[in-house]
Image 1 (cartoon, rainbow, N blue to C red):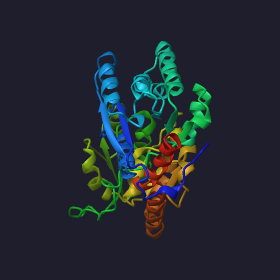
Image 2: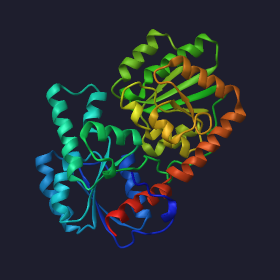
Image 3: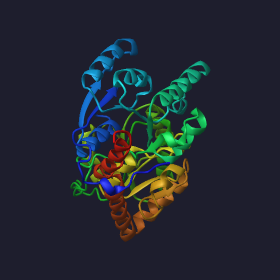
Length: 367
């Protein structure tokens, strides 16, 4: 499938183009925020046309406002499968790009929210949206393969655009001072507790380390779907090294991540977990922190174990515990891995790098 190299990096090759960023989306969500910044950095004028109301209420306004922007290209933002038809109508012949990012069906199945009837509906929505779009953007080759197999989308129609991180917010910072005697090795996780994150594996790994007498503290930030069950697991295992903290706004995350000796990604064993590299992994790389995450096909597309990040088998508390101990014991290796991971981020996953990639895709559609 076509890939766009760094030949357009640093150039405002989309100067003079208007791109409508359309759908029932949150502009502050990481994927949408980064895509808009990447397009603007390439010189495009990005007009956000968003409406969070239900389908019947939002669609007429989306069509009218998108058409009024007279776009050279329409980018349907995540989650946007339901809005592709409206975008196609409003585009008036301009190319329509769907930033699918992930499947509606896959997300529902991963969160155990799909009945038989809903699954058929979600699958149809994914399939029809991809057919209506000129190009479909996904974050990993593993996801591209899934869309080709599950929804019959031609591989030539899909492009890989990694998630990356907003490096205007996520960049290396000094570690914040620790209070008093708080010098224990600190492992940090920030997330929404969805199943693919496998937060239960983190708690079980903490229990393994406690039994081994290792002095490691865990800070778990956030809440969500599995939060209550994870708290119950921690109580059942009588884990004293795990501290739970409430969700932190995006702008406050760098201060939390900067205090991590190791920053955790995901550890779930779901099918979706094998196909994604989550925001938190890229945030850790952007901030030059040592990252530990699950060894999956998606992760292997970008990361080399021990060089850019520490990869361990999904849903394996013992392997996660062993990885943490290995990094705790070797300061030099941990620092080198963080530096190499950050260098990889700057080269391939920063907004500049993504801007070059996205600009190339746009130029293929709008010569």
